[in-house]
Amino acid sequence: MRDPAKAALLSAIIPGVGQFYNGRVLAGVLWLIVTPGLWIGTGGLLGWTAHVVSAYTAYSYARDRGVRPGARP
Image (cartoon, rainbow, N blue to C red):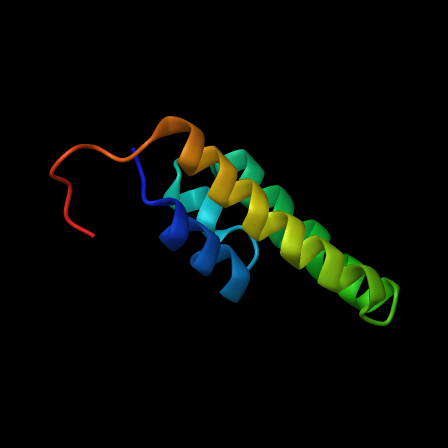
């Protein structure tokens, strides 16, 4: 169980890292490949969208699984 805010922040900094934090390795690799491709391929227009979606999916995955009671941040 992970902290949703931390997962979102990690993916906001580097897309895919929040998914790694959540234990979703394949999703993390996907975001690490797709997001830079969209940044380069569309001149940044869809790169922002992928960046935000990556952070949101990391947040929502962690939120849906909850935080362990008594877990340290």
